[in-house]
Image 1 (cartoon, rainbow, N blue to C red):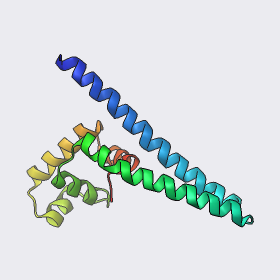
Image 2 (cartoon, helix red, strand yellow):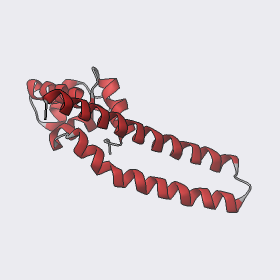
Image 3 (spheres, rainbow, N blue to C red):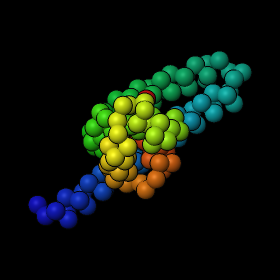
Image 4 (cartoon, helix red, strand yellow):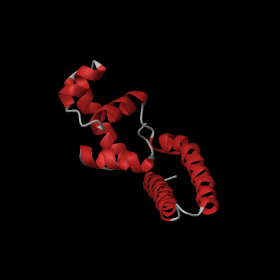
Length: 133
């Protein structure tokens, strides 16, 4: 298989995972919104809660697929989790007992795997994909 076709398949798969995660998050949000709007009808509210539970289960079951797809190492996941708290590179170093070059290498790998160019985009992408705890 040609390298270009492999990369193209990976790009398409990534787009599908992104769309899937975004759609599930949107569905979950809309269900919560609808529950709020139907707060007086207990049967409707309960039915929507069951649906929301099913969607949450589906999101959780798909988490491992997204993690495998984006292949973040455990240490990259640790760095990403601390990054999501708003920590600077220096603070990430202190929190995880890593050197600055090591943290920068992990951040670079995270950006590349998530196809982003900065920390805000990385955090947003990770949240959409359910990669953050």
